[in-house]
Length: 124
Figure 1 (cartoon, rainbow, N blue to C red):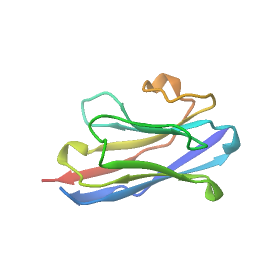
Figure 2: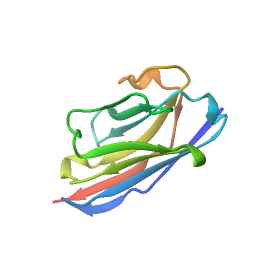
Figure 3: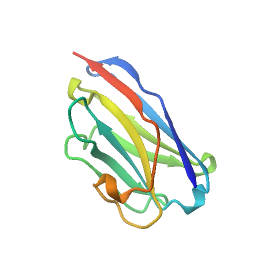
């Protein structure tokens, strides 16, 4: 089993930056791919960014390309989402997810483990 705990959300103004963290524990070595999803009120959960644990592959949603960066700290089993130039439309609950097998997928059904989510609110 793998446990994921997100942190770093908050209320910011448009144009500000935030860094989200996702700490993995348990059988973290079994995780192959990690990703960030987000869910705005009344909308489906959507893919934001993903990377293989080794860092060999990364992908981003078009809406965040050039503004968000996914990275990881192997020593601490932590994955980060650096968010720059935040917009009101980035407001959502952000979730960290992980899957045991290779590949970056965009569907929530492809991920085995989920964190509890952290709220990001961007005011205009």
